Length: 164
Length: 164
DNA sequence: GGAATTTACTGGTATATACCACTATATATG
DNA sequence: CATATATAGTGGTATATACCAGTAAATTCC
Image (cartoon, rainbow over all chains, first blue to last red; front, side):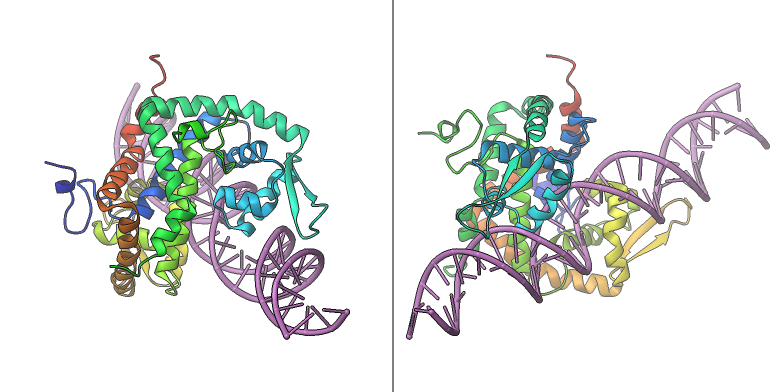
C-alpha cells in the first residue's frame, strides 16, 4: 500500500490528519521544528526566530529594515515588531541612514554579536541532530527546495494563473 | 556552479540570505506560503490557519482538544487560544465529553461546517496554483517529507543523540 | 479507599506575524 | 519649482503560537 492509498476521501491519513494542503504541511513542520530547535537552544532566553534574525543581520552589511524584511521574507511591520524585544534587550540597534533619511539600518550591538556567536554553537547542535535524523544530503536538498518556495520567482509562478 | 558553491563562509548565498538553518528555512517558506495562500483565500475574513484547523476538525470525529492539538502538532494551550476567535464567531463549539469530565470535544457548528465547505473551493484554487508552480508530483513528495518532519518518529530520531 | 500522580484544560504573558492607516522623506513629472 | 507619486518606517489591532502555573478530574498505588 502506498502512502497515497492511505488517504481517504476526506484527505486524511490513517491517523486522521488532514494532509492535502501544502501551506498546512509547512506550518505543521514549522511548529514541530520550532519546538525541537528551541529545546536544543535551551535556557539562553532567546527564541530560534531571534537567533535566525540575528544571524541574518550578522551576515548582512548593515541592512535597512526593508532589506532585512526581504531577506527574511517577512512583512516590514512584522519585522519592526519582532525586533523590539531585541532592541529593548540591547542586542540590536537601529541607526538612521546618512543618505536616505527615511531609512534605518539594523546592526548587532557588541553584546548582540557576542550572543549571536555563542548561540551559533547551540544552534549547530540542533542542526546536526536534524541532519542526522533526516540525512545530510536530503537536508541540503530540502533547504534548497524551501528557499525556492520562499523566492520571488516562486511567487511569480504561483500567481501566473493565466495559461491553463 | 552548483547551488552549494554559491554559499560563502558565512552561509549566505549571493543574495545575502542566511541559508544553513533548516528551522529558519521552514519558517521562511511558511511565511511566504502564508501570504500566497492568504491572497488566494481573499476576503472571507478567515486566515489560512483557521481554514486548516476547521478542515482538520471537519475530517475528525469530534476530537478532544488534546487529540486536535496532536493532529495539528500544536501546543494544547496555543490551540485553545487559536480557537477562541472561531468560537466567538460561532464557527466552532466545545462540548464536554460525557465519559471524561476533564475532556472537551471540538466540533464545527452548522455555520462553521458551511463556511468550511465554501472555503474549500477557495483553498483548492491556491492549492492548484501551488501544484502548478511546484509540480504535482514534487508537491506530494514535499508534503510527505514535511509530514515526516512533523511526526513523533522524527522527534525521536532528532532527540536520540546518544550513539555517534 | 485515600494519597500521590498523571492527564486535560485554562489563563497569563511573551514573542511572531500580518494587514491597515498614517507620517515623513524622496523622487518623478509637468 | 510645485505638485503628484512612490518608498521607508511606525503604531494599532488581530491572530498564531509557546511556555508556565494553576485547577480539576481521573488513575495508580499503597
